[in-house]
Image 1 (cartoon, rainbow, N blue to C red):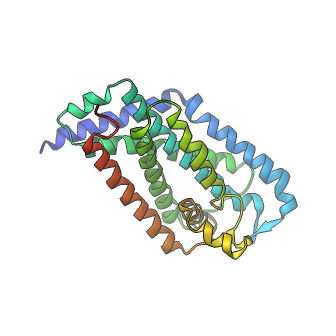
Image 2: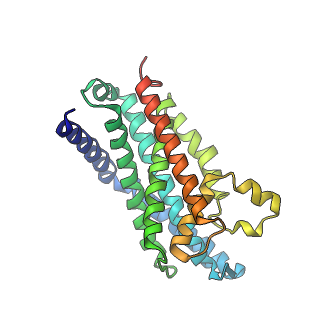
Image 3: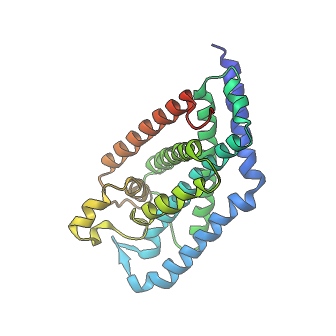
Length: 257
């Protein structure tokens, strides 16, 4: 086992991934900041005063953690799915697969790149949020943990999408028809306590609900979901998706002809 070789390979992939999205920051970092600013302006400043308070907070303050989490989810997912599919499309993924490094290192490198972009965009959107409302972090450890776990989870999800994608249209289908509806129905803009009981129950099958509420608890100290339950579900999803990604990579599914 050549630890130095594996570490060098991992760092190389991470540097490539970070350099990739940092080089085109106008396309990767700026758009989420602009989009989230519009959410704050429309939902916070224009609609928020009509809604009033939610769970004891101004509406804009209540939705701020959800908007930040939405940007993290989209960015982590987009980074990995576009990068890995690009490697498949240009066929330089084959060079990594024949190199004397385990697939675990390759997977870890891509995931770290997705986490880096997710956390960077989350930081930028948090700065934007401070122009519209006050944010006090009640539980810093929970905030960091949820951001890290969520970034990993959607980097893994993006990796799976990248594996099965056969053309550029395929990498847009899941974000448009699966990810976006789940985010909007995941408690970003409302408390599920406002919903009828049947819809509250249905909402609890949405994994994003647990991430948004865990992050909101870390920021504001309020949550619709038990925080321990949220962490257990997030960790389970991470373990399952990580195992699936490694299995697909080891089998060469979607990669080898």
